[in-house]
Length: 107
Image 1 (cartoon, helix red, strand yellow):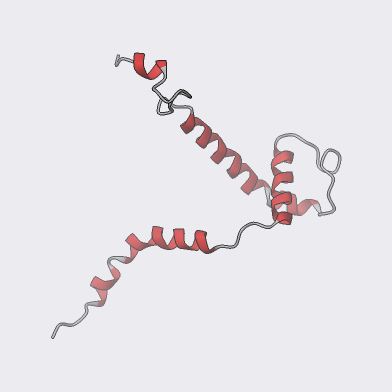
Image 2: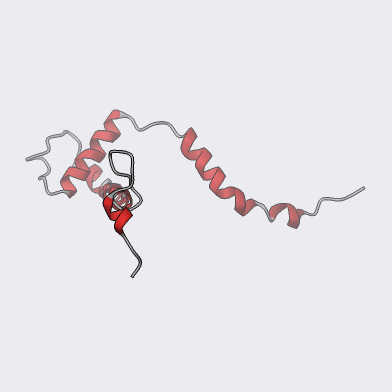
C-alpha cells in the first residue's frame, strides 16, 4: 500500500496555472454593450478626442478615467499584433512567398 506525499502532489500545480487561466477566460461572460461603449469612448479619448465635446455620453468622467488603463493596454496589444502580422512570416496575397522573403539572404 502506498501513501500520497502532499509535497509531491502540489509540485505539479504551477504547470496547471496557464490551463486554469485559459478556462477562466473562456468561461467568463462576454462584454456587454454598455461596457464596450465605455471602453470605446476611453480609447477614443486616449486617441485625442475631447470628452463631452466630441464624445457625448451620460456617464461621469471617473468611469472613463478608470478605463484609460485598459484602453491603453488594448492599444498596445493591437500594435504588437500589427507588428507581428507585418513581419516576413506573412504570405503574399497570391498564396506564395513575398519577394522580400524569396530574395532575402543572410548578411
